[in-house]
Image 1 (cartoon, rainbow, N blue to C red):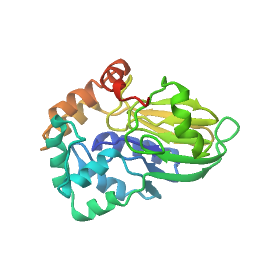
Image 2: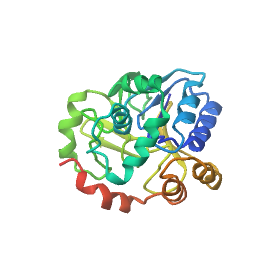
Image 3: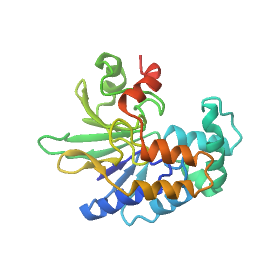
Image 4: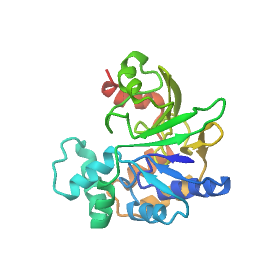
Length: 252
């Protein structure tokens, strides 16, 4: 089983990860939200729906905001500089796409036998935390802030994303793994990030042709294409930059 989070319409990164997943013989995939909010939403959805193995989805905050945008809802929670990009993505989607995204659940719970060093028992997939799709926490967030969120879940392993930075940590008795981001990886390195849930859980990074990917993004009509290519593909944010930008939003 593989967990792919925060694709953000980066079709070249998704293509590379799916190629590696195919070579590894993965038997099912969980998509952890924030799928289409980026430069290639239609191609991303088309590729995901063409996968020949079972694919399950959960909702991310950007998926929810995209649906709300299509339905004329307010965008107060979306920073002003990102609203034109979200409007463009919403306009690219069809009514069927909208209903599909709107039907994705907040969490997904599956049985998982992770082996001696893994996490025998249930694995819970969520986008940010089990309680919502917007909580922000990091590998260094104090455990006492997180236990009220994760202890009631009762899962051996919780897989999340949202902050686009991979980590593997403990919160009480729960192992919590951030799969990182396929399309917008932060925190060091430019490879597409994801999680392989095999004999033991393994954080993975898949290299791909970044210059070519940036060219493909710039060739789209996405209003933020240049920024996406430059900052999210060619020069992703470091962990220090992410903490500076989003640390004030950290779970208190």
